[in-house]
Length: 140
Image (cartoon, rainbow, N blue to C red; front, top):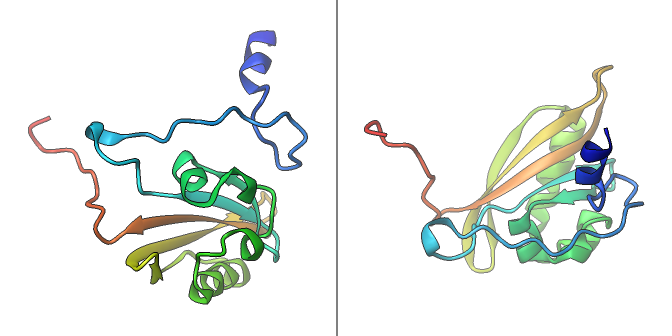
């Protein structure tokens, strides 16, 4: 049990009560540019960001975690927040193209649902149009 708890210390919780994580390195696939697939998890109608992957932290900063998305993700257009609102209210996954930093990005949102069926938040993922999806070849 202690070994397992040791692995969990320093990780963020929903309440952000743990000590902050040490900065994580952004994955660099194939020795190229940093991974360009920011993803995060928000909770509640204010879309409080409770988690951001390393690409998210690279794009928006570590201080974005723990703040409402509208206050911390300032580079996102209003259509991105409309997507988060719609996913939260409808409880259905949705996706749309948004414009971010002069480039087209695909934003996908998925509802977070508790065991009683209540939607309490949204997970989201961004992928640049120029980012070719990684797929395994049939020969591997």
